[in-house]
Length: 491
Image 1 (cartoon, rainbow, N blue to C red):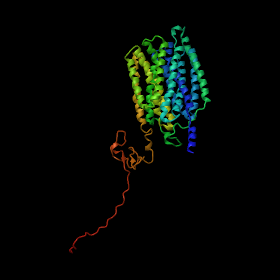
Image 2 (image 1 turned 30 degrees about the horizontal axis):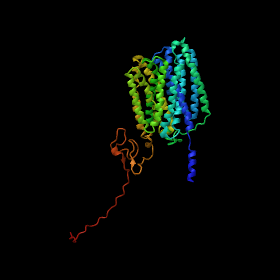
Image 3 (image 1 turned 135 degrees about the vertical axis):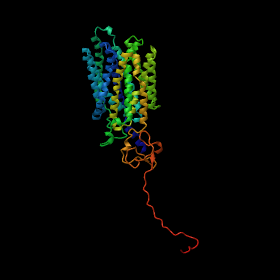
């Protein structure tokens, strides 16, 4: 009978290969659209004769949508589910792409920024739903690998986008008659993108994707569960993951947005050649994610994250203090070391959240607003002291210590205050000893004066105490006369 039950158990195991491929295609879509939007920075600068700080507002408008719509999207996921949220996000992007048509016709900079913001809102909703959905399509320990593979398709879309921009959008302004003709170059690509997104949204709507009611299985949340009333800000590893995403996205977007103009200052004459170099930047991210998905099976994600972060900082410094091909290809190679950062920081940040996963995803995706703030700082610095010196504002090495902090937090309990709320203190496995409760808790050990560490926890010398035991009542012993060898003399 055991031999018969084994095949049935295997056949009943859910297969997530098809849903993973479907969602991975969505990663390609928002990677393509995000990087195509970065090509608008030099395009808008040539149309409206803008300084770098104003041209970078195109990136700020796009990534500001992450700050505005990430938390509402997490609420939307809890209401209608992951699949319907993805469909809604695709239709929002269709509306945003079609808004580029009147913006180009009217040659209006505010309308361009509005269209970018609407597209960014759709991409925000898509990422907020797709990232955790890929993470929970299988075992939690392999979530970084799945996210890295999905992000590889994101990089593939990002690699193709600069080539499309160089062929159809980034034309030489001198070859066109007017600024209106330059602005009209965006109409064709964005109309084609809107049509493709509409078809994809309808396909996902009628496609079967597994409905996941619980975000994790290790701790399902029920009615009255205290974990559901906790703030997501109380999870330190999630907050640190959000800070890491803020720094990383700001640096990556800032470098890619200003790369075309930077390459021109280093001797590149053609806009198409500069766009091709930007596509090499994203191709390096593609190779890094494919290679990183294999390395992650051998090396812990937090350690690899720190190594890649410091390597990217090194090559960024090399580009700052060099010129010509060395400065150009030092920036290009940064794309390789940027590759694994987002999927791994995200996976580490939402690990162990249980029913709080959607809220954690919303918080981390809100931190993508770094793509709106850091590029604006880079543009302002480029206007004041040049593009090459403006790289000092990126501070890419900040991603590495934050990644190590996230890793160290994850080795602890994701809910460090959980054992404080229990009615009885936890017991040590295999022993009758009772854990020492934290300072301020009720119990016989709360008034103990043993030495403690800085965080208020017991020091290693006094971490365990024996419980109080009632003492047995004393027995009265009967006093007997002293025995002597000779009789005592009277009085």
